[in-house]
Length: 234
Length: 234
Image (cartoon, rainbow over all chains, first blue to last red; front, top):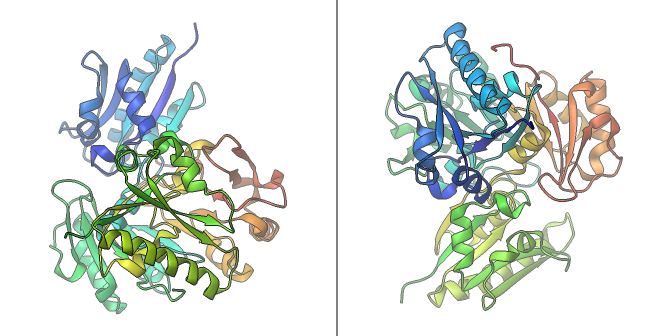
């Protein structure tokens, strides 16, 4: 029997309309879908794709504990990979739902690392939060020979300072509870007037404001964009 | 009369199936579309969206000369912006077709800069070549607290060396004729065995190989990915 294929399907930033036609087609015809949930909560990935999931599809849920320690999360992906492998071994494809893009800060990487040497894995790229935030804020990210630096908010203050200083466009992802630290770093560098805060881009609860006016407690799905502004080439 | 809206619509990296549902809907119902061509050649953006363009749509073509000098290209966007403004003033929407994502190294920025203070502009983000290349090459880009550095190939050798050295994941875009220089830089840093070359990701002519084996003359739509490899967190 031919083994099934594991599809890692990027769903984009949250608006179901930003799902690609390829991803939509795979989900609509899926017999088995898989997705993570965080600490037993609802799955954002599943909610983005909800309208496309066939009623009779089998659902493999990977419940990932809320932790920064390695073993418990590792165990959740071990179990998820084993469940998925059993379906693939039985000759059925599995469509794994991923917020944003599977290979851009996506947890699909953990399944890819566990399964790609044994099974055929196909990754369908999705719209990232990076360009969704830029689009919603009306902020061009990079043009011509400009550089773009992408940093996660949890990095230490000195490293953030060093990497933001002298960069051109900067995107800081996973802002969350690190917002006050990030605002202080950016303010110290004299860049606060250029910094824009974006929360849940493309979703109904979207919020966009100058970083100076952002709340101290941000959700995980939030970003700070520092762009160069008007292009001198024009 | 209400003025029209200018839509900057990201089409993704080349496979028409990687167009989002939102972009597809806007193109299918467009009365007026606009797109750039390079030096009188065919438009890649138009070819990606070809199946969706209504037969009776009016098409505004911006013919951008092949040049690195500012005034001729500037003049092409000036004229394109004026043509688009006339349609918007007449109360009709314009759907501008953009390869990849409009704000990620996209020429739509030049229209945005010229028209966004006078008209309502809405940007629809698209799948970037960045994540499309990673998906096709099977290379996770960034996870957890990793950084990603995005550099254009035309940058000078010393700046490329400085920015690649000590970075985590790196994507070099717009490789083109800069391939020998980039390969030399990466080799000198001892990173050649980690570097993957990707050309025309998601298109029928796609090519993926180790950078060491890549041809000296690459097309404009080519990329080098330097990723960290196996995630130690697993």
